[in-house]
Image 1 (cartoon, rainbow over the protein chains, first blue to last red):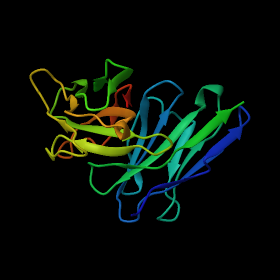
Image 2 (image 1 turned 90 degrees about the vertical axis):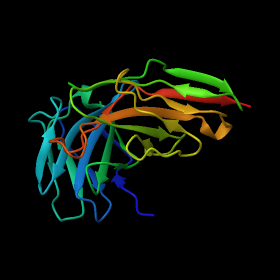
Image 3 (image 1 turned 120 degrees about the vertical axis):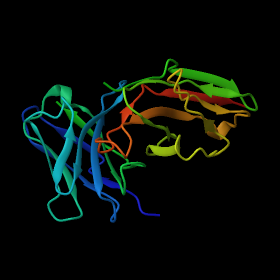
Image 4 (image 1 turned 60 degrees about the vertical axis):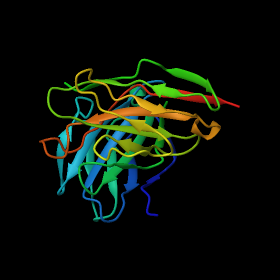
Length: 112
Length: 113
């Protein structure tokens, strides 16, 4: 059964550094999402992406964040200058229609 | 604004007992409601959604628009049901939402032998 994959599983970075989190959605899916979960808190929506553009984003998704689908298979989340409060588990998800979303295993980002 | 509330962080039952995980929501339009489950060391996966009105692994959930609730129920809990359960809401595929999910805090269900 096809799955969403994410790399790396754990990323440690210094405050102020740029990080890129990578996701490979399920191949025939059309909608792509990033969520994050700070330890002990809710899973929070960051951004949705459809037809090669951002379709919706949350207040969290400020100018420090960007998403890209560079080659038709990968879906990346970039954080330009990481802050301590960006430490969280980041989940990628994809869906064929705007209904059932399939989640990746997550990338744990630790900002020191 | 969309909001999902799961009032119980932890729920413990014994094997064979009924279980109900509560979920209440706030949304001005016609929402689509989901239950996602995360077993230990596994990814989030869809358990069921209100539109399909089916029973998965013995779990059912009914959308009650009057009470704005979508409680998850199972008549006889099994040890393998132990997991984190998340209630989630989206604006529905027919609306302007692109499927953004709003999650509740999650409930950790522990089923004791």
